Length: 128
Image 1 (tube, rainbow, N blue to C red):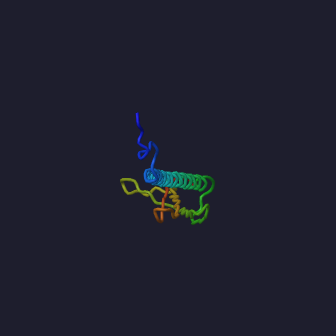
Image 2 (cartoon, helix red, strand yellow):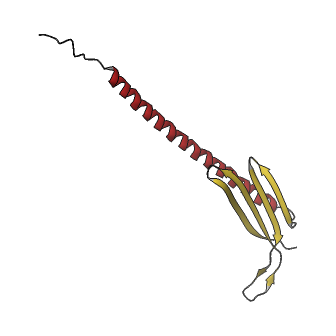
Image 3 (cartoon, rainbow, N blue to C red):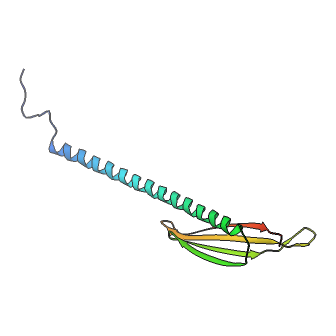
């Protein structure tokens, strides 16, 4: 049995460089996917915080005595604007029903998708 010393059983430098290049591209793709996943998670958390802020403010303005007016607040990069006012509601026979209030809360913020705006509103009856 004779062995030819010109062919080796190990890897050549070229094969190692190709393997390192493939690994680098795979690692870069993984990092990009992870970054996109983290952006999505941050966006979802931000939207949940905004939704909670809107609901809390709507609840706060709905309880207690009502006064017509506007209110502005800033919290964690989100601007909240509340409007409270009387609203006339008419029945089908055009009779005006009094005692209704419209409460609207709007949130404005910016994220990676650009400026965002959400609004939450409800109609409340108070027998004054």
